[in-house]
Length: 103
Image 1: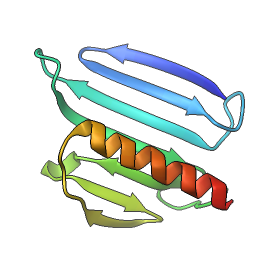
Image 2: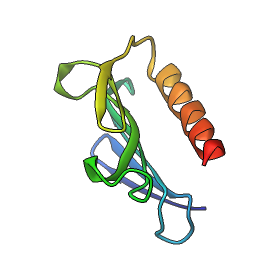
Image 3: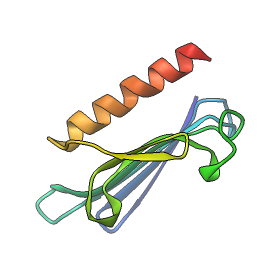
């Protein structure tokens, strides 16, 4: 597993290569913070073009783009209840673990 973190103005992007050096599957995390450190925007994605070649290889994802919290799974989008970013991230990582075990 190889991890690469890029930071910018209040944004952290992390790519974790689960397949080795720059090989899929990839976990992509983008998190935007306000000046107080509160998460204002996020995008979490499990990308594996060998499993799902559509949607740029995004098998699973959670984000709050377009003004609402939602989940992507194999090209389908559904709304999700939002409590905290930490809970969404925990749910996402648990689902990734289950998907990887099933493969």
